Amino acid sequence: MAPPLKRPPQETTENGATRQVGVELEFIGLESQPTAELVSRLYGGNIVKVDAHHYRVEETRFGDFEIELDTQYAHSKGIAQDQGAAAPSGTEPAAPPASDWGDRLEGQLRSAVGDVAKLWLPTEVSAPPIAWNELDRMEELIEGLREAGCEGSDASLLYAFGLQLNPEVPSFSADSLRRHLQAYLVLSAWLRVEIGLDLTRRLVPFVAPFPRGYALMVLREDYQPNLRGLILDYLDHNPTRNRELDMLPLFAHLDLRRVTAMVEDERIRARPTFHYRLPGTRLSEPGWGVSVEWNRWVEVERLAADEERLMEMAVAYRRHFDAPFASTEDWAARVRAWPGMGDGEADA
Image 1 (tube, rainbow, N blue to C red):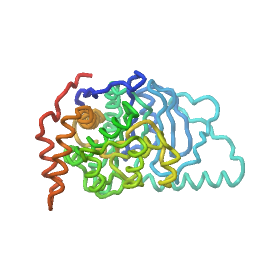
Image 2 (image 1 turned 120 degrees about the horizontal axis):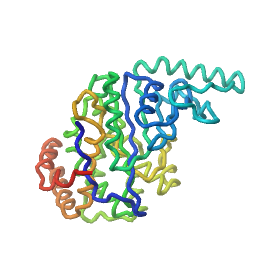
Image 3 (image 1 turned 90 degrees about the vertical axis):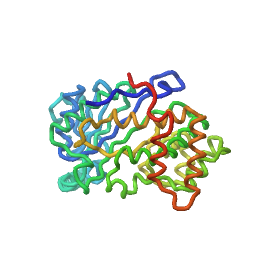
């Protein structure tokens, strides 16, 4: 059974709206179409076929879900085949005729790529932004995937499938974003131990930890840059999407020109959220689900909101890692025992 959701310190945005969270989930064992049918059964909505390995479930109770094979080479250029009304749930709209022979051939080639790639690449469900206090509804999808025999990263050393959370930021101020980044750097080692990060996910580049030098700089007591300085420092030390907490989507939302000038990667999607990509998909683990990973993330937000505790832990972090042969495992153990860790309400 999933645990109750922990309350973040700031439940609303600067505009007073309930904060929302995007969820991206990777797994193997169920292809895109039956996954779309599962989503529609759970949350309503109309199934639209985009291509052979990409489906959309539109107008669910939360918004539109995207379900696709996790490779860009298997998909069309993003134009849905049904340009009219969405198909009724459980049906498949007819594809329009190809505009020319080249388009038809490209579609056939992409479908063939997907037919082969689906044997080892995961299916990915991208949920629409959901109010943080309704995230436990995603447990219905987790259970549905379990019942269908799907597997996550914990089923094989060959799998590096992830669960990604995209929490809407509570504030765009430099002070708030700095404190959240500092809190994450302090808690990163603890999160890796708590998650029980699989060997394969530890080795893949897309959840790489932040460079130690960058962490030590950001955790200085006198580190209080303005927003421009915060973004520039991040880009100087992290000109890549391959970070366990990828700040590029948020910084692109705030300063797209600067981000695209320093990082050439068309996959960066500007959005007003943190992009937390560390957790693996652990479908074989009883009780695991979106609520578990959200509750771990909330510890980052609670530390960011407690500036006194944050500064105490930042000083301790710098002292710990300034020493020769400093142990990441020892630091994680210190964090686990730190007063205040795990406290707070969990009754959403």
